Picture (cartoon, rainbow, N blue to C red):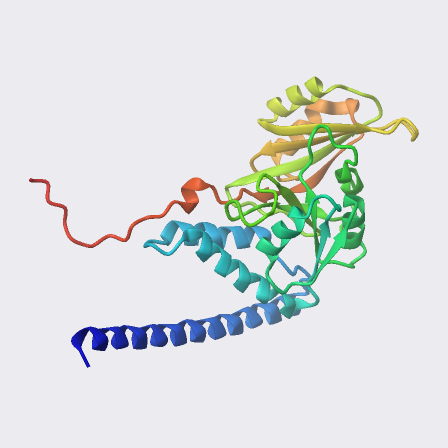
Length: 304
């Protein structure tokens, strides 16, 4: 056997050893996840997923990763690891907004929630909200709101009931993904609380008995140090007087925090209530996914 063939055989043997080690670590990680589940059970926690924690794991991995292996693939591997263990805590499924002319939401759901997770199609976003609220699905994929929307699905989550779905994530999270419509974006809803990561956006709904105008709300938001990323309003003249303003802001909103109370004070009697609709950790961006070459460890020579 030539020296090159020996070297090749040795490298393949080393790959086999590394694969076995990776597999051992996956099994060990699974045992730890099982331990987490048991502790949560003893504490009476019913929270199956923690989207903010999942995002922080990926942020950390992207920051530490070096070498030629694509960061996007690293993130995808970890998404599969995370989703694979969700079923340990009970049935895990996804309700997906899937109109006949737009299959891309299904692709976004698969990219984020795994190859084998059970998913159901719904032609109306409202039906997705109902599926999550009724316990038919663990979470739902709905279209990201736009100003010219007709359906305004978000009005169905303007409730302070603890089982009401909340916005928990924005898709695609890992770069452009495999959606058949590459410009497509979606939000994920689930009845869990939004937790702060330091890289967040938040949603609120403001309800008023009359059209107070977005400018009034914008001024009040500025007084509370909120910067608006998106706004939309909805009014149904066939119902009792009621105007709803859907607001996305940069940063994390603590419903019981000083800023939220300042906003309520600034709006005063002009409104009926403010409902926190959740939020999301911002998806990985181009800088997060930029490949970093592994250092050779040799000192740089400053002289030619």
